[in-house]
Amino acid sequence: MLDLKDALLRIDVVKQATGLSRATIYRRMKTNDFPAPCRLSARCSRWPAESIRNWIQAQRSLAESV
Image (cartoon, rainbow, N blue to C red):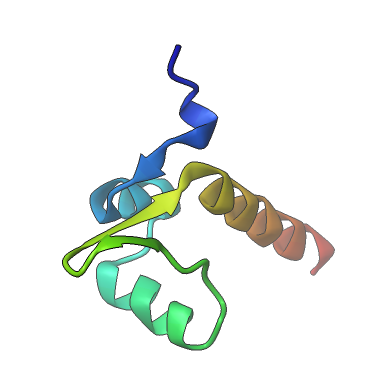
C-alpha cells in the first residue's frame, strides 16, 4: 500500500504546499533555507514529502516564537 508520507513531490505540489514561487524555493535552497530535492535523473527532481512537512512545521514554530 502506498504511504503518502513517503511520497516524492513535484515542484508544482511543493509550490502549492508552501505558497512559495519556484524562484523563491530555489533562492532559499541556495542559502540552505529550504530542503534540497532528490535528483532522480539529470532533468528530474522531487522533494520528499516528509522534508517539506518538516520545513513547514519549522516555519510555523519560528512564527509562533516571534
